[in-house]
Length: 309
Image (cartoon, rainbow, N blue to C red; front, side):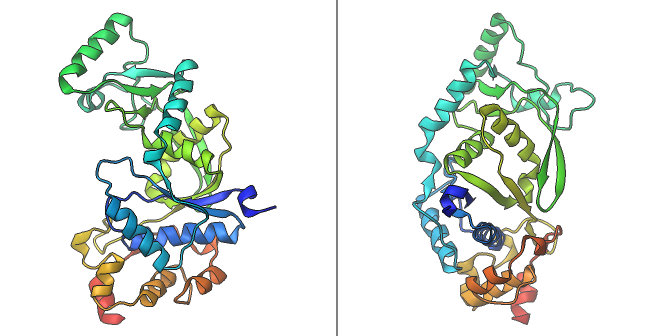
């Protein structure tokens, strides 16, 4: 059986900026997990956000290749998949599984919630409106130059998923958005639809997305899709415990090169964070194990490292 027949792993960055060390580390782990499992590996650009730019597609793919990652077939662009997302939304509409929501962020923030619902969960305000109330909702949104969002009708219950690093994780499934009021399709929808399209059987990504995974698994089951294996990788943080950003100094491959770091040194640094000795993808793949991924974030301090490397 070919790796493609068995399924694929994937990496799906958003081309809204250059990749930093955390992105490169997660991508390298995703690549190694798939290759170790005998899966294919595909690349997907999540380019639906208005901040995405073509130039970042080029620099991201260049950096990923430079650190030794390869992928099978052409890169998939979500901007080429709008018809597919519309088709799934149409199916959900036909099955009476979505409804229009006229709530603003302020409405949702101020609305009362059930005692068991977590902060931020949608309270179902627009789920059972009359036609008169729906028309009033549309009129409320008209001056804002936006239409209603579409929300999925769910059981408003909990769902437990299993992650290779975190074990069992239980999340509340509210009536989440599948298409926003500006017409853009929501991440929870497009990620599920694209994973099925690309035959993804292993999802490796940063653990800030763990909380959204029960929602995605719920949608997979609703659409009859197979649920992949999930591996949520801890983030790379700065010495203040925050996400890496430009203010943290040299955090992208280009910036590190300008500071005198070679590609091999950057690779060795990422490898070391996972307990692997080596400065190339062959050594990395040979020594890599999912079990080597700790639950704690990797703290990156470029100033200290610059003095020690």
